[in-house]
Length: 400
Image 1 (cartoon, one colour):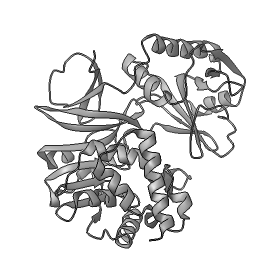
Image 2 (cartoon, one colour):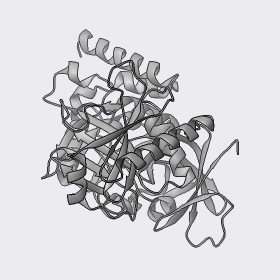
Image 3 (cartoon, one colour):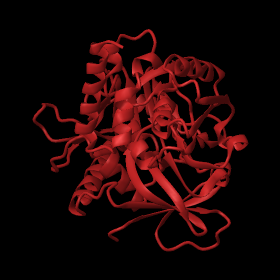
Image 4 (cartoon, helix red, strand yellow):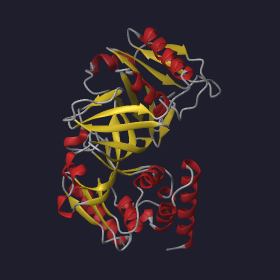
């Protein structure tokens, strides 16, 4: 290991801490010790030691299906997991093996890490990378993660590194009674990294953090909600919403209407504050638009950019859309762009939704509590309920 690589790792840890706040010492130590470049062979170290997710595999349509996650969210989830030396951990989604190596570093020689993935190519590469990095003790198995890995159960901790639509009963059954599971949970199209622990007949969140992950493949991928409107342009809709793709293609390529919001705000609140607010208030047509391109054609004014992905969110009504957009000049506040026959009406509705959120004090993920009740539980406390196959999720705020 050269001094340059040590410096690059130290600089990455500094950026992660600056972005996300103080970290538990075991997590910081693991980030400093584990060589990320060995899990991304072929890439120059300067492009590896950055606080960004790096796509490592795409499907036949060019959509990313595996990656090395952003170090900041990896550190956040490891904090949520509350690992200790000697813990036995199951990871759902092997990726490059980098996260499993971080887990292995924290649990130490007296602990054990098992990582499972549905993709044999991903499994083989993760094994190779872990061996090269000195973490050959990590066990990587090619199975559908929905079933967990009963052979090594029970586990002190579980973590999913892919977006999940529901909690698999096998995971909860394979956790120790005092265990903890951390998952990027999909609720109304938004991902929240949730640390769950048992609370009697259900599971209660210990912490909730807004995040974004590729969806799990297999049974827990949930219903198909991503639609391709044009080259590199995708639309993600809530469960059960039908989409007229051909009509929306015409809409986004046609005339538009704009509306001012009159609420100064940066882009960070888009997937944390406003998106979570609409989920709580029952707006059923909240959608996300993404365009993967260095120079976007349709989303040139999108308020969020993640690597080459430009993203925005808004409302869908039949064959019309309204989405949030940066102003025409860099100094302008965010506004709204509408597309389709109801462009003006829908743009006005979205602008009003933002103003209502602002008046309510801009509630965000902070203070959000999520409880997961098995569907067999007959009655739930009052609150917003999102029903899935195995669980019903009750959302509330701890200050409410």
